[in-house]
Length: 158
Image (cartoon, rainbow, N blue to C red; front, top):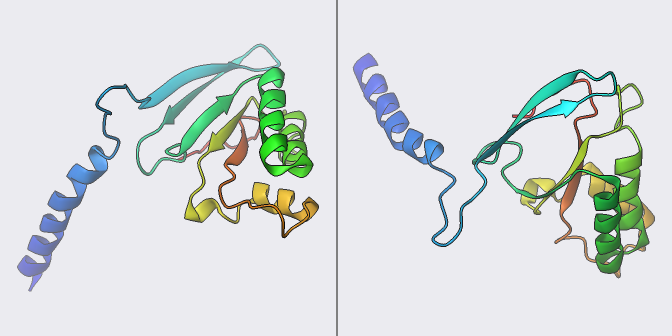
């Protein structure tokens, strides 16, 4: 009985591990960003290292865009205004200009724009936008999710 459970477990691991370790596949005619490592320069002039993996299962796997400046946030807000209206643009700028939580040490260092998925359909961002939008005439199903990042105390992003 114990041997059968071990064989079943070993077989499952043998089938799953190759898929997990090679989930992000290269494209035929283009390289793909697999991971990114960097350092944030904090207001006190110290640095904070970060690592972002874009592989399957990571928090960043559906990243479409990273906005790192006020001008980038304004550009993104204009795109959201054109496609989803004023409330969507306001939410982008609110995310850039404000701390995510009042007790955070600083405003976000960058915004991460992610392609929509089932789990992101009811995100906090979309709920904020929906609460201000005229509900029935605007479709938000294809609206990318925007996360304000690296202003919080916690940096556990997996």
